[in-house]
Length: 164
Image (cartoon, rainbow, N blue to C red):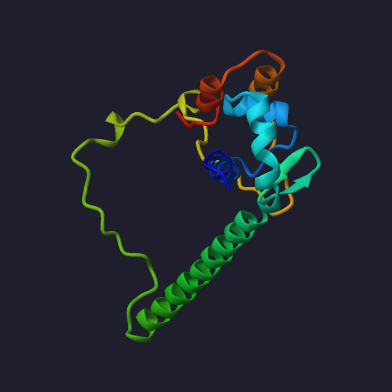
């Protein structure tokens, strides 16, 4: 592979890790990456053995398998943690400890009436990212659709995807 082809492969893999896929159309891909369409057209055939086309997206099967392996590992760790917690709970009961949770918090220095309760309209929105399962395609935001319809540039795309 040439240096340009290796760079495109690395870039596509990184974008696929974050976004699960990239557009399969070379023109759209060039717009998103901020390069000339001719450069992408020239380098794309060399990197295509590492990707598959699903609908209108380029997907990296190797990264999908890696993501699935990490998800299975997290599930096994969570199950192990639950088994360990149950085991500790059983040991505590056998040693004569009561099953009521202990109160390890100290008393507050502030009277209960002085604490402000957060109003529901002031709460922060959930900042967690959506989890996608294998085979799901990520939802496309309205901002992304607007950006694709306009003449957006690569810097704007990076800001939209939290890349810069």
